[in-house]
Length: 549
Image (cartoon, one colour):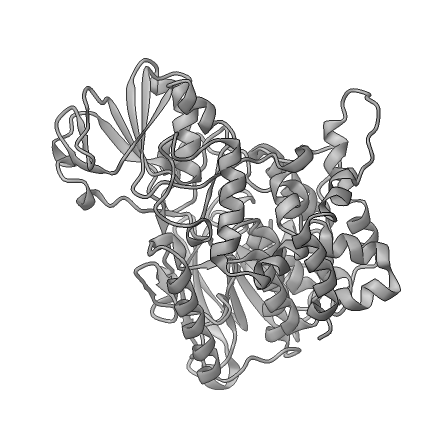
């Protein structure tokens, strides 16, 4: 790491290059640095921590205004789906990586593309303001602080990569009596391990991914865990059909197209039937008031076992706390509660941006969730402020590929009115589909959103053409997991190895599982069986028409 005063000499950049300030050195920041270098822009990255990784870097003590994770955290997205588009996760890595393995992958990525030299650690970005001549130059004044010393620099563009898990949302006003509660209560942001709950009666509020994880883990040491939910949830497992990671089975272009053929209610019914076949959500107290596609589902392999063994008891929403008890909306009461963990999500904000990006009720107006629509020059972009049912890393990467092309002048944005129309339409669609909740303001469907941004930079895969030029590859692109490698098959940033990496992605999935020799079964058995399903046959025929354009 170089001193701030030397940053104009970072790498081998020339003074003619545009300088791009990148705020945050997590997953979004790392791929943003790489995209800047690829477009001959000069990246200067700042992070308040002393290492890369952002959310995924475990620390024993939570840091203020930074994301925080618990030691046992395992990612909910499998390695092929989480990989950046031109850097596969090593084949021997487990399909679902813990936070330490993810950090190892990030380090490999940063080393391979030589990214660390662009990062200044222990440095806070205090403010980003327009320069007086912004309307003509698009430049920003950026004030930073390191070890109590403030400095400023001029940036030609700014990429904000701070994520949306830094500010815990703790709505205590929604829980009458909490001020009288004599036990310990805190937000899941501050949770690290279950040891402090040994022999205690613990209430976890919220049944998102964190709430489910914590309820199960705490149940290993606690006397009893209660898991409170307002609406219930649909519960997914990491392991899908034939033992493949669930996202590699369901996040496919074939399934995406099948969803377009039928109303959401029909697709919801199909998935709900599949989930209830594993265990009946009504019997377990989990059945939600909404359909599957109306709220972000919860992914947890162990919660059903914890419920059926009595270690975790599902409860309705808390209506009131007393000094030692919790009273629930169904009238039931649990006495002698020792601790309450609020897994109630997060809010996000950008105080260093002033009023350039306003956040109201956890909602923000950004074109394609990236660009503020009313700036005179498109030199500010937000990367990774999005909530897919899937991996954030590939989305952050394709956003950064697009943003840096805009900064470079290779791609243009539509007019402010056109951008606002797109923003308004997306908000209306989201309000129509999802349960009203702070977490559903930045929700997207992975493939549809990736394709949407990819089309803007000319890298959306042409499956129709592939069926004629490389049928085997086309088959895997359409029916196989929709991995980020697909967005390196053509157009700007094309990677010659992309096709090969796609055709070998199943080998990398199976490699860490085959630790004991067995008789090999046909690799594509589940795909062959799928072809006899009517919906897939329809999708196969319709694929010809779907990708004509």
